[in-house]
Image (cartoon, rainbow, N blue to C red):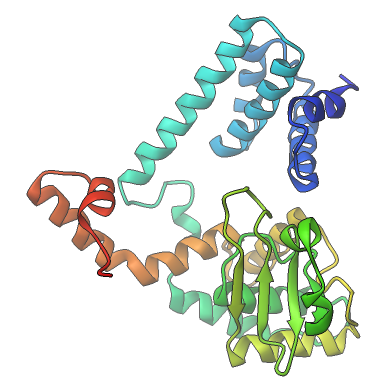
Length: 296
């Protein structure tokens, strides 16, 4: 299946490079376990024998589906993939509707206070020198606690305000930039990093985050135009997991950080809203869509 990239690009001509890279990565997972996309049930069994999460499997199946649709494969094969993707999605929604952390993630779930303690532990032990993994992880944890934006910090570019103002089109929309202004406090996340509907984000960093990132830039002698974190998204995630495992024997990834911070901010109000919705006989989704309105 050496024609994979060509088939995907033909099926989705407006595909962003970062999305294509994700599809290629997913397809390589099939090759690693010697799977055959034309034999979905066998592929399901092979992946069920790995440690991959259901959502990771869904990504792989979706990649296989797009490829097979481009190859105009048998509709019965395509339907098997579609049904399995739907099953995983339905199970994921049902599990999250419970509002309880999953059994797999529970051992690694910590409070916001424990997350801050982890960051403090790393800071007390790290050595501030170029290439030091703990130093890098510390900086990432501080920034992600400030703004938990998945793994988008990988490849973030340091840029001056004047150079940033000149950026246009895809270069701007597909990028993540730390804008070097008076206090270097503006983080820009492009509009199309993950999806076409994601809004651009302009984040004003706090003094704690500014101190951490400025220190990292100075120690590593990073110049305007350079990537601040010169590694892949996968490496970023693995670095965080490895570091948290080392200090507190838990796997604290970017996803877990998002859950910890969101839970701390909204758990009480979320539970209160759920109770209210049940009392008056509709879902939380309907309540948000129909009944909660912002005054003009």
